[in-house]
Image (cartoon, rainbow, N blue to C red; front, side, top):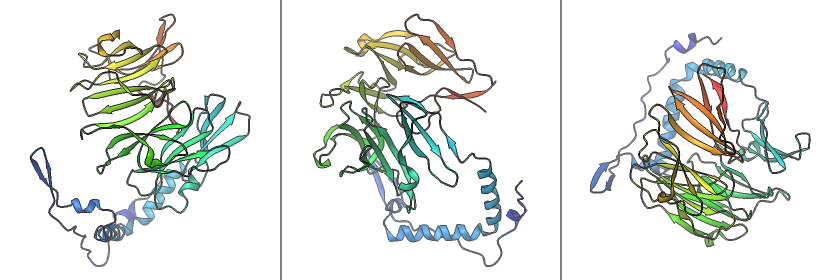
Length: 394
């Protein structure tokens, strides 16, 4: 157990004065509304005055917390002692490969791997974050996506802490990195099915994802095609791929409104088509299955309902109700598989997972052994470990 007695001792010696940040007048004007921000100058991370102030803050904190050093180490050691440092995620199969993530004792970052054909096959390391992070003061991984043909890896890194990433491409056979690297990107990305065309998102000065580009591997990024520019500062832009890998989806959303566009992933140079133009207060999300889009929406449904529309004509006029709105059940989302629809609900504060067989309409709920639990569902878009359908006791 940690002994916290030394944390109660006051700082000895001279009294320190905390650093005070300078104030410089700066006025934001938007829609005729003026807001004064005297600390706007601190956004410039390369400004020597900003750096000097941050160093002064760090020095002050270090001095004031000096008497807790032994407690900090004891807490760290106790927490680390409860963690299984050498560990392995549950492998998942995609194509002929089994993908998984593992960690090693004494290393700060995960290692992304795969095996061909079976779990007994030799391991192939796709990316070792520990090697990428070596010598960096900060490191974070953003995108991590294998191409549809399993031959290329797209990944992006942030080494500044600004949450802005540089996107790169690795040939998994030759281990050669492509010459082009794309700066100022968001961790939002999609491969087209040709494994040569990619879609990526860049951010504006406020770090808002706002532009979607199309890039052809091996070409100059200056020739990349701007696909979409979101001008409304209330909306964020994202790009991804359906679980079926048939469509690239462009998603636009504010706090209460959404809009989704779709593109045939086999025809990456064709035009994105909108499913439903944005309507204030209307939210919706889209999942693909064979010849239909499943749409979860709050249109005239506070707790959301499930609709269905043909992929050939998915406009709102063709939406048909699959699951009606329920006053006591929140519909959180759906996942479509070959012959099953997984429906994520919440009732009485607890998440519930309903499995529906599409060919027979038979259905059942997954039973969880704990009285309270959490269920997390996410599509497998990266190699990062996901808690898909896993019940976590609280």
